[in-house]
Image (cartoon, rainbow, N blue to C red; front, top):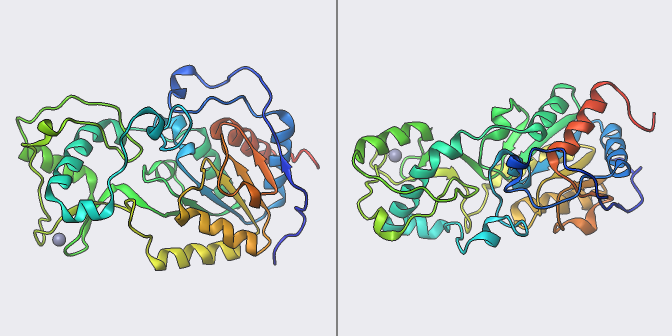
Amino acid sequence: MKLTWWTHKLHTTPVKTALTVPAGMLSFVPSCSTADAHSLELLQDFVSRASRLFVISGAGLSTESGIPDYRSEGVGLYARTDRRPIQHAEFVHSAKSRQRYWARNFVGWPQFSSRQPNAAHYALRRWEERGKLHWLVTQNVDALHSKAGQKRLTELHGCSHRVICLGCGVTSAREELQNRFIALNPDWRAQEGAVAPDGDVFLEDEQVLHFRVPSCENCGGILKPDVTFFGDTVKKATVQFVNDRLAESDAVLVVGSSLQVYSGYRFLLAASEGKMPIAILNIGPTRADHLAGLKVSGRCGEVLSVTAVNLQVGSSVFN
Ligand SMILES: [Zn+2]
């Protein structure tokens, strides 16, 4: 049964208060005032009322872990550089593109793979432990939810910590591939640039010319990160699985996503069609703002850790 209690449109605006996150952690977090107390109360109430919460997270959640997003004003990859993520067809059809992709990914991997979950990831895990969170769908491929210990999780676009063979479908750990890269390229060196949301770094074309890319040890096939590149689609079975979890839920919370990509946005359309209450926590506008009963602008880590702690002590502000 769907809840019908959320009937008013409540789009709150932040007030100017002092930052509480260390400045060093904010280099990829868009400028934003701290969410005001009223917004926090409304979000607290929203979460308190839900008993089977469905959460969809995006790149905005990981910026506080030092991983940039694509679209944020001023600090996202699109704003800072003219780089764009590789397209699926280009990766599959061009050996040269794969060489460039993997050379960059090889350089960025040590830094990218060492990123750790932040307060928002841990808050969501606490909701799961308390039985508040029914399912978490993330559009991120950085494995930070898994690192935080999240179990009821679907990585909608896969995970960059896994590699899949396009020939035989066997998956393996990205870390193993890193060792194969090192073994194949003992004398290869490149200067590291800024790391992108998928672990990519920028390298000049001449730097990647001599980088050697291994193939599948099983069948000799092409190795690809086990992620959904732009231009590819999420498996139907995965979409169906997530839709089933959504149907079992009683409220939807978006955390740190502009929902510009349809693969995530479609679940908001389904939730809206099913008259489910929807809340959004994000800095900046999202594609689903018109579908949400509550919109809170604030940093995910700050806002969710407060909400999670309040739930832990059982103190809804309306109780
Ligand atoms: Zn293979």
